[in-house]
Length: 379
Ligand code: ATP
Ligand code: MG
Picture 1 (cartoon, rainbow, N blue to C red):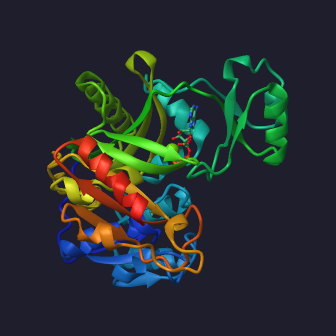
Picture 2: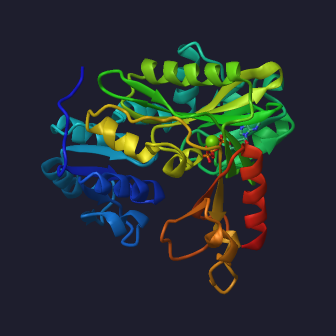
Picture 3: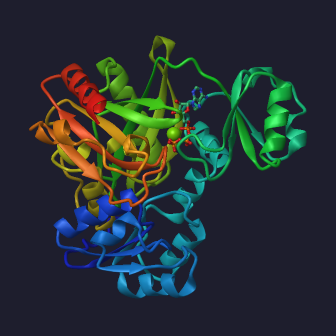
C-alpha cells in the first residue's frame, strides 16, 4: 500500500554514516530534509552533512528511541546493521525502508541465495555450510570454488579460493568453522549490476546497467552503459525487478550479476541500499541513486534514470595517497571539464580503503574509459 508523502523539512534517519550515508545525507539536505545519522564513529563521513549525529552503537536503545521519536522515516546504508534494530524501529511506528526482513535476507549469503533461487532466478552452484560436517560430501560440483563467510563479507573480505576438497576443509577451519557458502568458481565474461528503486506503491525505476571491473576483490571501475547486448540488458533489469517485487522491497536495491558464456546471467549477490557501482548516477542521470533512496522512503515517485552521457566511474582507494599521507596529484583530474571528483572526507588513507571516486562523462564509453585510465596514471 502506498504511504502518505513525507515532505521537507521532515527529519530522515539513517543507520550508518559511511560514504553511502554521506551521499544520502547530501541528497536529502539538497531537497530540504533534515538528517539524523546513527554511527558510533565520531568522524563518520556522513557527520559533515548531518543535522544530528548520534555517536552510538547501532543497537543502542536510547539512540534507537531518539530515531523513533524524531524521524519521519528511517533507512540504512549497509546490510551489516542489526536487522533487529530496524524491526524495533518499525514496531515503534517509524516507517523503515528497506524492511528489517529484507536486510536480514541480504546480510546472510545462504538466505540470500535461497531467496534468489526460490524467486526462480539463477545463482552459481553453492553449498551451504553450517558446520565442518557439511563439507563431508562430494564437493566436486562446487570445485574449484570460493569459500565465503555467510555473514559480514564485503570488498572480497572473508573469501578464500579453494581448488580441492582438502583446501575447502582447511579454509573452513581457518575461518573457525563459521557458517559459510562454498560457491563454484564461474567463468566470467563480464560482471554487471542493476540498481532498482521500488516504492510502497510498486512504482519501479531501473538505472542503466553498469559493467564492473574489480581489482583484488574490490570494485575498481564501472562502465556505463555496460558493453552487453540490449537483450541482455533487458534481461538483467527484468531479473532485478523480479527480485525487488518478490522481496516486496521498498527502497534502492542493487543486484550484482555474472555474465557467462552464451550471455547467461546468474545473480552473484544483492545489496539492500545504494551501491558503489551506482556512483555514476551522481553525475550521469537526472536522479542519483541517493535521491531515489530519499524518494522511496518518503513515498515520492522515483525520478528519471536515463543516462545523460556514457560514463566511467573510477574508485579512489587509499593506495593512491602518498605514503606520508600526502594527497594524490589532482592537477589533471581537476582541470578536465568533463570529470567530477567526489571525496568522502575520510582522514586516514589506508590501502584498500575507499576514499572517493571520479566520474568521466564522454561521447562514448570507450572515450570515457580511455580518459579515466589516463587520469588514473597521473594521480
Ligand atoms: P562486495 O561487497 O564488494 O560486492 P563481496 O565481499 O560481497 O564484495 P562478492 O561480490 O561475493 O564479494 O565477490 C567479489 C568478487 O569476487 C566478485 O565481484 C567477482 O569478481 C569475484 N567472485 C566472487 N564469487 C565468484 C564466483 N563464484 N566465480 C567467479 N568470481 C567470483
Ligand atoms: Mg559483491
